[in-house]
Image (tube, rainbow, N blue to C red):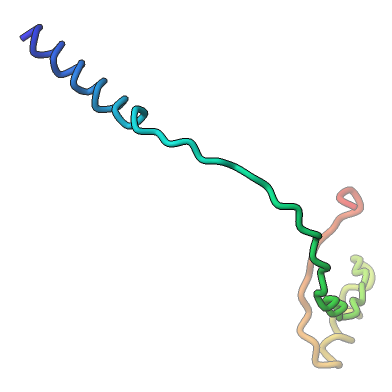
Length: 85
């Protein structure tokens, strides 16, 4: 059994290294060519929506919500506290 393992190991090594024997060298050469000018159109400018910040405190919360409801705006809250900011 020991001899069989040696034979298999030698066979595997020969199989893996056999690809390097037929290696061909590739000639690399370079041709100087002037760089082409990039003629891409300019990207369109971003059209951002205007944001309006409303500061809601415990004193003005009812008034702010009432005004938003009168305008037909569904209020959505993003929270920052005085410690977070």
